[in-house]
Length: 239
Image (cartoon, rainbow, N blue to C red; front, top):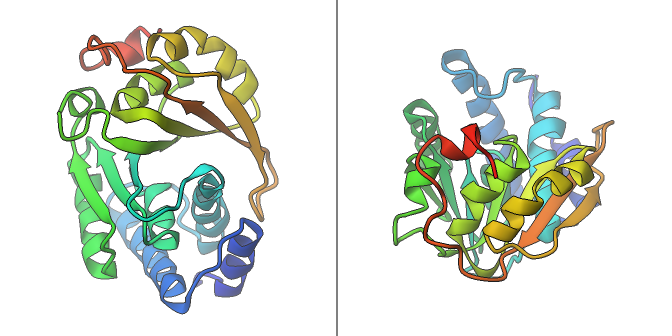
């Protein structure tokens, strides 16, 4: 069963995004690549096109609600995995630059092969551990936005993400209905990493029957040099 283009177009429109014929073609290619890639590497679990449409493509596009779409904006997708939410966003927002970061060679090889096949020019693929990448001058405090989907508990994710952001940049984290409680649990991490007051935004994703939230945290000052801590520590001992 192929991706339902009409449902994709309608769903994207509900999220405020108008997709061209070329963009729709790229989403079709992405769905096909996920299906093929799933045979070798468990990228998304269920590769049924209807699941990919609602749970992966449209869910990813919901992040655009808090992205600056100006030309030249740079977005980091942390723990991109199968390219979610980075690839759907990059297809829909061609003027925005995306760096997809993941530690797995199999996943980054998949991402590179898709980018080459699709002709997307606004994506860079990077393979590295997030704690190590955040200390590289070419990436530390270089991004306008950081996005993440199903990566880590919020306190850990904040330690991963905020070192990459410029002051004034924003982390946009996809979470579920427990987002308000997660924000409370992440109070120390937000303060330590120089985040501002968090905002929880409810998003309605077309064709999904469960609640989604975006946790948005603006970076209000320079992250102390000691963060992120060495590899593995943020996950084992979250702030």
